Length: 310
Length: 171
Ligand SMILES: C[S@@+](CC[C@H](N)C(=O)[O-])C[C@H]1O[C@@H](n2cnc3c(N)ncnc32)[C@H](O)[C@@H]1O
Image 1 (tube, rainbow over the protein chains, first blue to last red):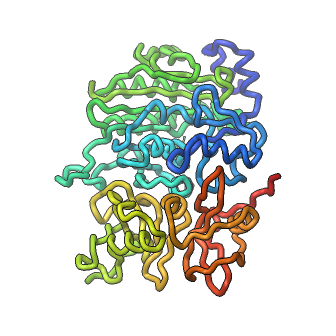
Image 2: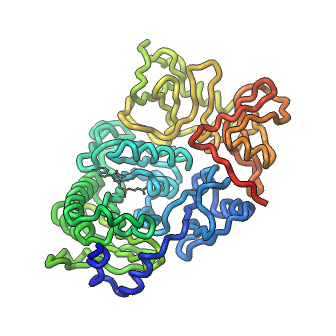
Image 3: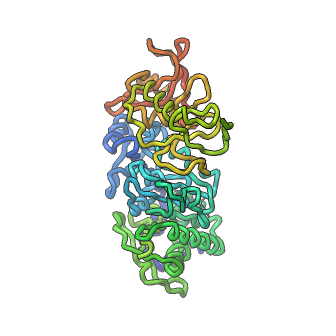
C-alpha cells in the first residue's frame, strides 16, 4: 500500500486525486513587493520573453509554463521568488499588518517568511526561527536577496523558544512579551509534495508520522503560548496524514487556551476530518482546510487558523 | 574603550562621542556615508537600527532589540567598515540604491549581463574611483544591480558568488 492509498477513503474524487499526484507541478513564482510592483515584474518578464500567467486567485502569484524561475533579470533583482502555488496560502491566511510582531517558528528556507515580510511592508518585527543551521543559511540568503530588513533570525528548537533575547519582561519600549501572530509551517512527512519529489514516499513510515506528530504538537503549543490573547496562529503542513493535521489541532485545543476560526480561503479545498482510524477529534477541526492536488492543480496542503485566549 | 566581540550583534552607538568599542563606526557615520556617497535623502534611514557583528560588518534592521542580541541575523548586511574604503553590499544597494543620484554607473544590456556574471568591464566613466552603484534599465526604469569597484579605468564586479548568474541572451 502506498501512503496515498491510505487516504482514498477521505478523498472526494479518487481518480482525479491519483491522476493529479502523478503529474509534475508547474513552475510558480511570487512577486516580491518589497522590491517592485506586480506590474513592473510582469513587464520585465514580458521584455525578456518569459511566458507567465497570474493564478486566478492571486495577481502576484504567477505560473511560468516554460521557464525555470531562476535564470532571468527579475530573479537577479530579487523581484520574484520561486514558491509553489499552494505554499502561498498560509502567510495570506495569517494576514499580518505592517508594524506587527510575528514569529515564524519553522522558517527555513524562508519562502513564507519572506512573504510575511512583504505583507508587513518590511516593517514591525519578524522572527524567523529554525532549528537547522544549514537550512537557516538558505533562509538568510533568500531574505537578503529579497531585501527583507525587518527579520531577526534565530536558531532554536521552537518547542522551547524563549522570548528573553527579545527583551521579554524588561521595560524597554521595544520589548516583546508576546507575538501578535505566529506561523507554524511544521516539519512533516511531506506526502503532499509527491508531485515535486517523486521519492517523497521512500522514507515514509507510520512510526515517522507518529514521531513527527509529537514534534508538531510541541511546536504548535509553544506558538500558542508565545502569542498574545486575541492574536492568531496559523498551522500548516504539506501532508495528508490526519495524525499530523487534525490530531495535532485536537491535542492543542485541549492543552492550550485557543480556538479554531474559519479560513476565508481563496483556494478550493475541503473541511478538516473529524474522525480517523477510530479516533474522534474536536468537531471544530472541520474549520481547517484540506487541499488535495486535484482541487487547484497544486501540491497537497493543510492549513488551519487558531485564535488565542478567546 | 573595549575590544570588538565579533561573535555577537551590538547596536552601533548613535554618534562617535558615544563610542565604547574601539574602531566601531557610529550610526551617524554609517548613514552619512550612504547618503553622501549616493546622494540619498537624509531621512532615508530614519527608524532603522544598525548593528555590528564580526570585524566591521554592519547590518541594517527595521526593528530594535536589546543589545547585544543573541541571533543569527538582524535585518540585512549593509556596509563593510573597519577598512580604508567602506564597501556597501550588493543586497543593500539593490534595496536602497534605487533613488541614488551620485556614483551611479548605468550599463548597456550586454555590459549588464557580463557584470552580473562577475566579469570585469571597461565602460566609459569620468567620475570618482571607488565603489560605484552599478545599474541598468529594466521595465522602463533604472534599477541597481550591485556594486562595482572602479579603479585604473576598469570596473570590477564585486557581485558575490551566490548572487552571480549567467543569463541567456534573449532576442
Ligand atoms: C516545512 S519546513 C519549513 C518551510 C518554510 N516555512 C518555508 O516556507 O520555506 C519545516 C522546517 O521546520 C524545521 N524544524 C524541524 N523541527 C524543528 C523544531 N523542533 N524547531 C524549529 N524548527 C524545526 C526544519 O528544519 C524545516 O526547515
